[in-house]
Length: 108
Image (cartoon, rainbow, N blue to C red; front, top):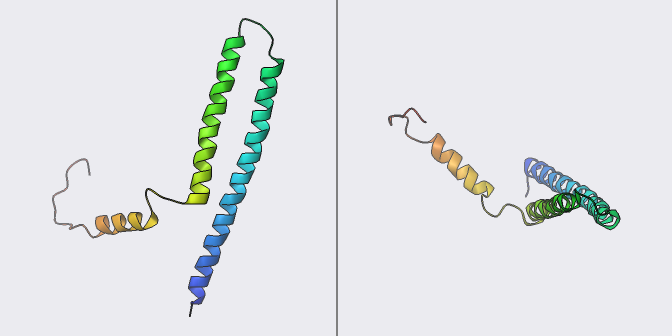
């Protein structure tokens, strides 16, 4: 049998996951709108002394935002792959249970 506390914890985790997915979809919608505006900017851009600067700025925004939204999507849908919560808990216990009698240095 699952206890009430376990059910409450599972419900909270499910709510957190739904909130993360909702935030990702809002981020994705904003990304699509911004990319559309940047592409329209390429279309209406006329010859001028700053054309190359504007194009390079727009391209760097597109590349950076694409990388960030890809990482955001991976974090939301794939979960933690590198530093899992179990690893964090193990490290916290390791530092918590560390022998207090050891000599600490000035940088610890």
